[in-house]
Image (cartoon, rainbow, N blue to C red; front, side, top):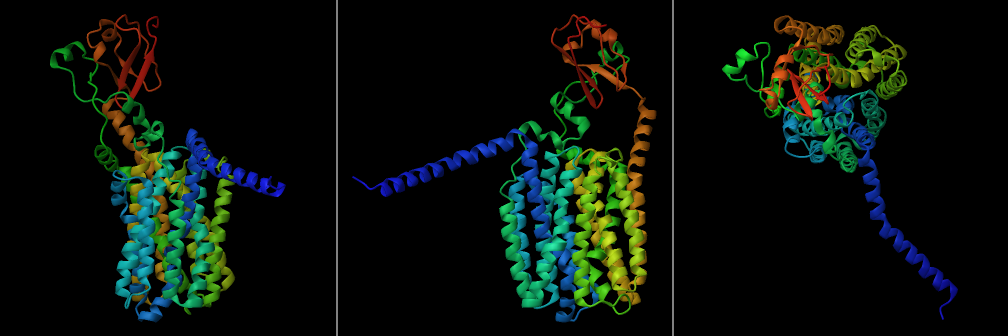
Length: 535
């Protein structure tokens, strides 16, 4: 007969085995619970985006810490060294069309895994370069591609889960940029001071790889019932029904002289959507605004530490400059917390106009930084400018989706504009500094670019308004109604076919069919039920 202690041990082992066997079932129930409501999983993906931004942007934001080290190591000019950082940032956005194409072939998770590997390889191989020329490949190209894969794929997936009212989740995810200033930059600074910049690059590559690969796990595709976000909001109902393809035969034209009848066809492909999107003038206005704003921010990412330490400007020490960079992260976090708190108050204001306000703040604080002559004043203006950067992380992209109505195309245009802006900024700041030997002229120009880009953001809704009004004047303010194929020969439908306003309901008596009548209203669809007794 066994002792009581042995029976208790066997009971504990059996209960432990039962708990282990139940673990897969509990995990499956947890996954099912998340998938029942897509926004639950959307918030988990938002946390993954936060980690992606925190890890991958460590070297993009931390390049200002590497800036002086690379100049001392390779004895290069300010402009040449700055081009490495600008190329890295430009590549991180300019390859967005390639990423958009990859997303049509493989999943968002696969693209993010590729991005994690590219970032780790780029950072690790940079530690072995014998000259700065090789950094253009390792950091400028390979690492930049990895950042774009992570940023673009995760952002598109997040916007699919939150197609409307996306300000709060985008704010939470973009807090990763601020966390990169506050967490990974001090870590990178510690590695550089303790082990040198080469060993620091190897260590930071391991940190990036582990964090990003783990964060790729929850990146599940949106359930099929929610997948229509690739279309503009006005086109979702059309995709379910049919599209206008051709006019009716000439013999029916005389009969239906008040309307252009159409036949249903397949929905447009993504190439057609992209062509239509690029054909809008407000798209290019949005691109110019994004590029201009990013060319101004390239100074803060690449040249800010060198500016603060320059004897001709503020003349701060290395430790003081690093502390200001850390305070930038605090300023961004504080700004985003404020924006989250007042999101309900400013919800009635179009997001694009909030972006205009942010650009104006950036221009004012950049001028203030030019006039700074002490640690306190420089820190105050840099931290204040970081509040404008908090706005930049949220409202231009959400405003673009509101105005241009296509999240995938807006994401591609937005990131491409950021890449173009980095290239412009590298010549704008670094080139002018080498010519004049001072930061004063480049920074005044940067402030002007911020203001001009804000003006372009404000023009986006104005240009769209003018274009739509011109369309109304050309084609009329009413939409042409046409009946689907099953009602082509119906006298009642023919008699009641007429011009239809956007807000009107179409009601008539028809003995042709009892179920539903589909009415195509140019780019809108209207399904009218139970019209048998309606007049």
